[in-house]
Image 1 (tube, rainbow, N blue to C red):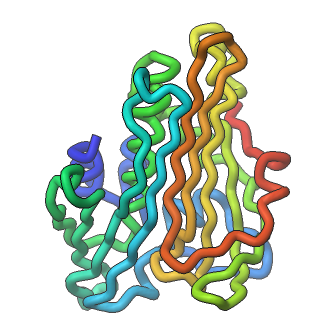
Image 2 (image 1 turned 180 degrees about the vertical axis):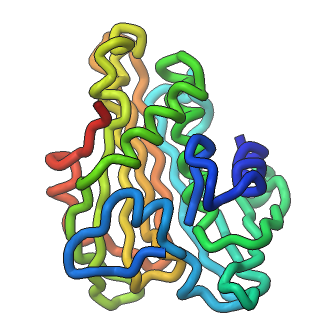
Length: 245
């Protein structure tokens, strides 16, 4: 899975939609489109050379024997160098200690590679729980994130300061009526992105939630939030989930 992050970044973080590309769009008073926020925006514009962004990661599974152990860890992204064209050379360390696989170096990025890590992991987790083809699942994400609307204004705290941003909640598989019977009840899996221009690297929090109403089906929640984040109100996220059709 981590290898796929590296490959996706090296393919082109700004071009290959199917491989979850990354970014410029400028923040506006009205919410940006999903495409602008996730794919076109230059997330690393507000991160200086030598600056590191740390995300706290938490995994909570209801059945650890089936899904593996629960744990907390860190994901660290550091900008090594800023190029004249505005792109950045970065290093990404996913997890620490016995889970650490070493820092991966990725050059020429404008988008935050942590987004790719989150999306790769979301697809892998869904495939584990619901089965099916990962390429197909990835395409469902692409459809959900290329459609219009869906971002809801939200105020939160970052390092003790209130900042304005947006939350996006998507359910890529809910509208897939053709294959719903094959998803073992996990078709309402929800994925959230909290973002703001006032946060280094643009993304403040990533959330994934998987649950099924079928008896004996385990649930899984994974959260990744930037250090210094305090969420004030999430009441609009689940009620405004953007579903792919």
